[in-house]
Length: 398
Image 1 (cartoon, helix red, strand yellow):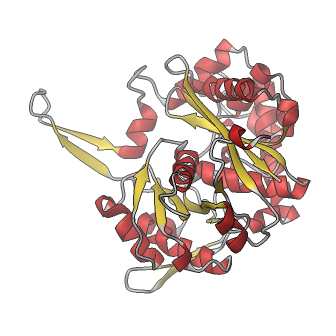
Image 2 (cartoon, one colour; image 1 turned 30 degrees about the vertical axis):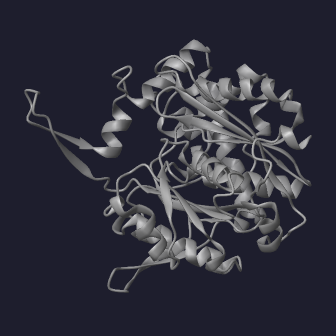
């Protein structure tokens, strides 16, 4: 590719300077008891130390989260203090696409030469999400309470329907077959456990110890708690909640964090554990589809992205996405004429959970590791955001 064909020619993601916590399911770990912003800052510090990156190399911080957390107003100053490095920065929020958008925002900072080494720190805690009370002076209700996670999952302002309804609606439009959706969910489950056994996820996931504010041990986060092996017979026996949607063919709420760095080309060579590996930003695409048709939006965004770049799915080495419903991948296969067995080879959020903010960050890190193991190539990362948004990005690993 010519230099001008890269979206951010001067920006790089240095290999091996990243890491993610495991994603324990809602209420299943000590993460349910901590300030997630404080935990994320401390965890990033431990991950950087493990990757032999001195914290004083960082000069900026892009934070991504979606669930309000205590002292969120203080944002980067608070989180960077927990990291142990006083840094300026800002906050990004884009529902489930937050991790990808935060990384792109960091690349823009590097490209503009506003910073040289930008930390991307994404996190969320769905466990015990806060309940807000909003004063409504002109409404008949003087106050309106909102349970941040569950009320938003249960109500799309564009359609008045729940998130699960988007999956059922899209399944009907594309005439998805329940048997194929069940098979896909079990296949994704199998991919995850095969990746765990292969050791590739050990390059991504970092066990982390939790301390209370008094410094007392709360527990160790060293597993994607809540993830169990699925059999096809079990999934097929589950009650259908909407068209092709069961408890086994959708993701689950979870808690966690994930971090990576975006730097200039020169800095990437200095701090990468393998400076010969070059990870570059090629292009991105976002679009909205019809209201409440979220499962088709990511596929349409990928289709538009590839057309813009003059590429096809045959040109892409690694394909990974955020897939809250198995039907997302079935629809992707139909729209792109692509075998869904060839994607998400090291796992995906359908299986390991959905803490929103860090979901696509972990997805990206896993995708880069897979690409390196294959010797490089184009990496396609995509997903949905809220009720009808699709977002996609293309990277090149060489």
